[in-house]
Structure formats: C-alpha cells, structure tokens
Amino acid sequence: MKRILFFFIFFYSHVCFAYENIRLLEGIDIHLKSNPEKALTSLLNYNDSRCEVTFIKKGERDHTRIMFDLSDDLTELYKFLSKFDDNVSIRCLNYVYKFKSKLGNQDHNVIFDLDICKNKIISNNITIFLLSHRLHGDKIEELENLKSAFGSFSSKPPIITNYDLIQTSAADGKKYKNIYKKTVWKDQIKFNNDKENIHFAIVAKREYAEKYGKDRSYTSINASMRDFGYNSRICF
Image (tube, rainbow, N blue to C red):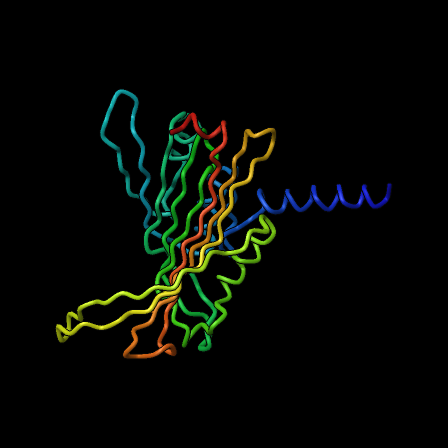
C-alpha cells in the first residue's frame, strides 16, 4: 500500500511539474496557462524590449499589428486581452538575454513568441541563433536546462540527424561544406481527460564550416510548448 501511495504521489507531482511549471528560460517566469500580464511583466523585469501584438478583428480579414515597448503603460492592452475571445500573438524580437560564457555573462538576442487565447498563454516559443561553443562551451547551460525540463515531461529519446550542405561563399565565390548535427526532443501528451494536449519540442542545430573546423562551431536553439487541447482549438 505504501509503495502504491508513493508511486501515485511521485507520478502526480511529476506530471504537475512537467507541464504547468516549465519555463523555457531561467529567470523568465512564463508558463502555459499563465495570464499575459504576468508573462510580459516577467519579461520586463528581466529586460526591456520592442514587441508586436497581432490579431484579427471580428469582421475583418487583415491582421492588426501594434508595436509597443514592454516598459510602456500596457493597461489598455491587458484590458483588450481580457475581453478578446480570439487568438492573439505577441512577438518580442531581439529580446536581450544574458547567457553564461567563459568571459562572464554575454548579451545575446532571443526571439520570444507567445500565443494567447481567452487571456491565457497557450503557446510559448523561443528562438536563439548561433551560440558559440568557444564562448559557451560544449554543454551550453541554457540547452542543458531545456533538456532537463524535457526529461521531466517525457522519457522519449532525442532524434539525431547529421547532414552536410555545400554553400557558396559571398566573400570569394567558392563552395564550402557546412556540417550540421540536428537534435530534436519532441513529445505530445494529453492531460485532464484529453482536454489539454501539450506539445513540447526542442530543436538544437549545431553547425560548423569544414574549412574552420569543429572548434568554430555554433548552436542554434528553438524550444516551444503549446496546448493543442479542446480548450485551445476554439481560438484557431
């Protein structure tokens, strides 16, 4: 009986952590189901940024796009989001995040994409380009944190693909080989009687030019969590 109770407690806490408490970047308190005000406030508390909100007004075909700074007075935006019943997207382009490196914390741009339905976040996506292994090491801390978070969500192993691309240099017009290693962690799990269908994916692409060697390699990362469940489909 104690063993069964222990398993139930462990499994329940594991599921709760693996889904609702996962953050894609340390220090940025954004979770699925959280409200947009909490998410944007957390972004601002870490750093300011220029962002764009996109939505379609009822009866119109074209998107409405409005630019704003996280440091602006966003009272009217939060009022709008609390009443709007359709999908709203927010993108913060070139958001500055501090990545740990061999030279201390280094500023690096991150793209944040949020999808909102009925004043709740249903999708959280980050894109990070070209982190240098010379600066950040072979085990990039932010990627290791994401892998750990995925491990709390799913036991699926990653899919690894190696491939080469021949590209023409704009500098000398010659063709050079770029070597890539793409690693994908991906799973989709249903919760709450199938009403919540949570997709979690991490794509890490390591690349280097053959003429420079592996010690000049870079890694780009895309990580996303999305609720494809019944409660979210009404906004698409």
